[in-house]
Length: 178
Image (cartoon, rainbow, N blue to C red):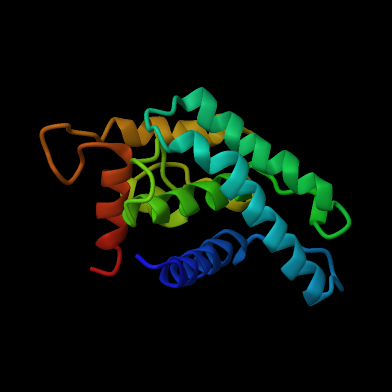
């Protein structure tokens, strides 16, 4: 892919990632200027691309490392406390942001398969996870991991549609409009 095509695609997936992670989460304080939001998203993308994503290039990321990376995104967001409600992202927004971005990069064959998937209401409903947890309200990794571990019970390595967490979620997501 040429550099200009790559830049365009990366910009588009970042826009989709931000939209998916921020859409229901009310992350910004009232009266934050659009320029400040734009600058924040630029810095956040740079941080994730340069600091977090490289650790996924080799694949086989453990749960513990992935959770730490989600927490690192959360901690990084605290540098922009003047813009963000509660001074930083909560764990739920951080996981959605990172997991969604990794999912797009994986689907474009930029990185190997990520360890988890974006946790939201739709995937919980598709998995028949009860009780539903509002992903925008998740404060700690334990609730998030309860959903991920529940999804692991649905994995069947012999079935191409549920061979791993990422593939399972991709198939459930693809069928969400059925």
